[in-house]
Length: 311
Image (cartoon, rainbow, N blue to C red; front, side, top):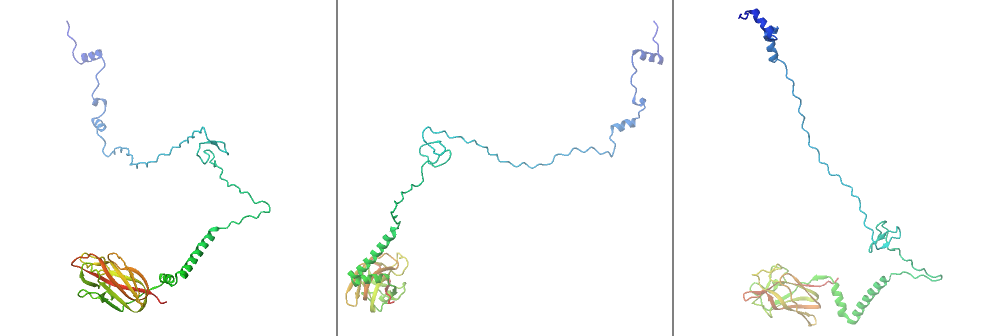
C-alpha cells in the first residue's frame, strides 16, 4: 500500500479535488483595516437628520347648535258633521267662529240695516236723555235745599252756614273747676300747652267733677277739641286716668243750656261738634274714665274752642 502524497502540491491538489477554495481574509482582498473602521464609526461633524416637526396645538371647535328640524304640519281630521264655510265650503266643527281652512267668519256679523223712513216722514232726532236726567236731579236738590231753608226757618239755614263756615280758635277768658289736684289747677287746661294738665284731685272715675270755661262775649261755637290725659302722646300704664264719657253743657247768652253726651277714645286730641250760637260758657262734667284706679286721678291736658269766622 503506498502513502498519500504530502506537501503543498498534494494539499492543493486535494482542494482542487474536494471543491471551491475558502474565502480569504479581508487584508487579502486589498481593503485596509482603516477603511473598514470608517464604515463602522460615524464621521465627526456630520449632523443627524432632524426628526419631523410635531403638529401644533389646535383649539377645540365651537359647539354648533342643533339645527331645528322642520316639522311637517299634520292636517286636522275633517269633521263629519258641521256647518260648511260660505267662502270655501270646508266643514267646520260646531262651536267654531272662524273657518279652519280660510279663517273667514262663520257667523254673519254685518249689522242689520235699519229700515229707512217713508217718503214724507221726518226722521226722529237722536238726543241724549242722560243730560236731561242729570239736570232734573240737580234742580230737584236745589229746590229741596231752598224749601228746607224756608220751611225749617233760621235753624236750617244756620246749619248750612255752620257746615261751610271757616273755623277760628276762640280763647277762654274765664275758667274754673269743681276741684283740682295739687299743682294741677284748672287754668293749665286752657294755656295752649298739651304737656300741662288739669287733675280732679280724686281717685277713681271722678264722677260729677267738672271743668268750665267762659268767653268774654257771645260766640258762635262750632267745635270743642279735647286732649285727654297728661299729653297728646299715647297713654302709658303709669299715667293718670283719661275721660271716657262725660256731659258737655253749653250755655248761650239767653241762658239756654245745650247738652250733649260725648264718648271719646283713649288718648289723642279729639273733636266734638256742638254748633251753638251766642255761646257764653262750656262745662264738661265727668262720668267714666279710662285706666281709673284708687291711686289715679282723671286728667285733661287741653280744652280748645273753635267758632265761626266773622268774614
